[in-house]
Length: 113
Image 1 (cartoon, rainbow, N blue to C red):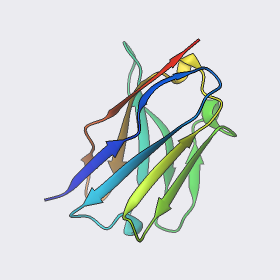
Image 2 (image 1 turned 120 degrees about the horizontal axis):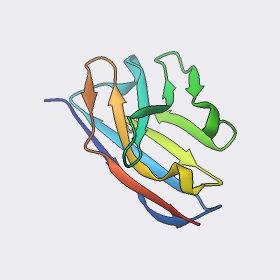
Image 3 (image 1 turned 90 degrees about the horizontal axis):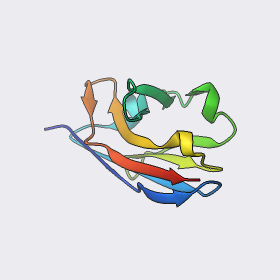
């Protein structure tokens, strides 16, 4: 059974940092594209960043230079380091694997002004 379990969300002031973690079970994350999405209240879920099996990364424009997606193959974990957080970064952050197609349960990130 494939599971993705996120952690690391919380409440932080603008300008602060958080690191999200996504641990995979029943899946080898290094062989597939892994991604972080977020969904703000009243908005559609959007891609924040992804990392391919080859290690290439892609970022949504508003997070470029502030967020870093990384993968620890030994820990079967993908991370999202979020720096210089802004209130607009508030939302539920979801971990996603492309193959198999799976979502985590989400972790709440709230950035206060």
